[in-house]
Image 1: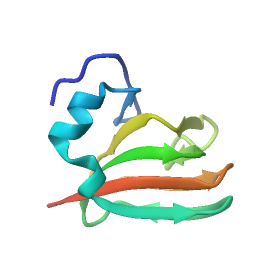
Image 2: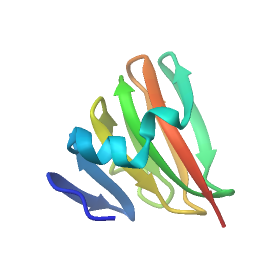
Image 3: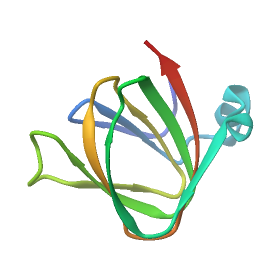
Length: 105
């Protein structure tokens, strides 16, 4: 999927900062499932497949397995894709609301 705007990849995690609204509409992001959480730490493994998510609110610090001393932040306005099999610690530092889609293996 090609997206305009600020793109980077960190440890295999693809991050697009503020993708155009037209792209989000084409992907029907607002029809995806929704996840919300208060500030909290959640260990997670993407074992069901890769996961795409769009952050409507909040901010998360992500610690990827094997790179625990190199966290990065994602949050409001970001479109993010985590690869299948990746293990992380999800540290929500603000209330989070995201739309997500798991692409089964």
